[in-house]
Image 1 (cartoon, rainbow, N blue to C red):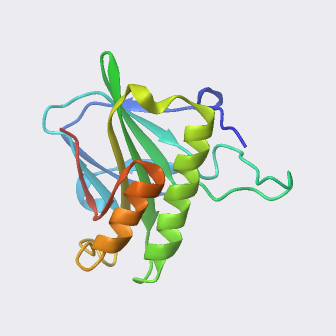
Image 2: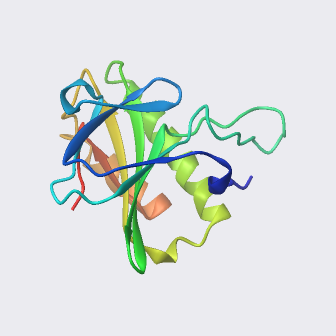
Length: 162
């Protein structure tokens, strides 16, 4: 299934920090209130593209909807772009496998829909409000994710935009 990124609404933000929460679709909130906390010290323009519950994407059977990650953050760095796929969780540690699968599914659909060779950064973030720094012990999962998607997986709540 292909995805039409241009069929959705997105918004831009240029502040030095902000948070995002899953209000289906995602919403921008003050930094301290976010499940994911975005640090944008250079105040670059960041385009926030809500994905889950905003873009319709169906499984091969044509009936069931794919579960996409919550958002895509895009930074334009002419002539290239930085992509940050973000999945937000407000659950226990078990949500790591569920969130990782949502990120992987979304990235693979994007790879089938667009030429991603213009990306300078390919990042995926799984942010869990109850476990904001859960990356320890996930090295094997993170390496497998990179091999399968070409994106670097980070399991943490803070997303630094550099």
